[in-house]
Length: 192
Image (cartoon, rainbow, N blue to C red; front, side):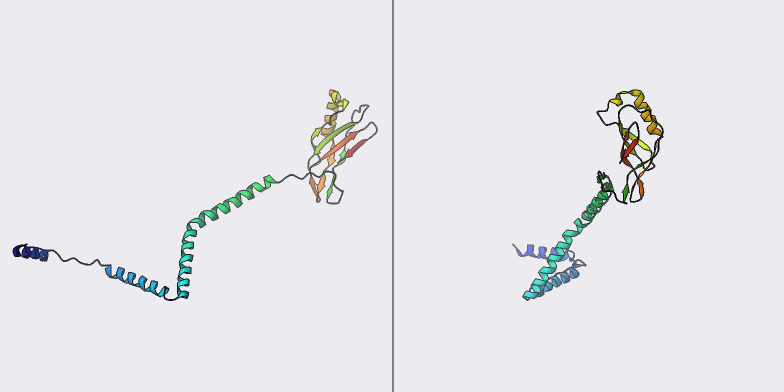
């Protein structure tokens, strides 16, 4: 290059505006220097290095767990609420058959009955009794010839409609239960 060209270039460079350092440059340099000093101090001896690594590990674990904690807690709480709502429907009803009689539970007993047109054979009927001593349902066990006589069945139904029972009890409270009634020409037998 010739000397004229160099002079023009230097003159044009002087005419350019002076660059200014960013206002936060000093702060950024101080932060970098502080981090470097902390890094050097943490590696100065084995105990300080182990303490530094432990704190870094705990910080990373804490940062990993925070995003998972809320959904995990929400899932546990919703599962518990659903289980609490469904648990009563999952309970298996307890049916006591052939239980040893105690004062904790009693069977239903006959309170009053109307007369019934008896047949020549025994009439056996299984009845369901509610907490108020009323018959809610009945079934006729199979193999009974009298069940074919419609008049006799109708007469039995009318008698059962008006028959009163003292309800069964469970821990002193009225409870529903099932009872077998056997009607004989000479007597009426009730078995729980």
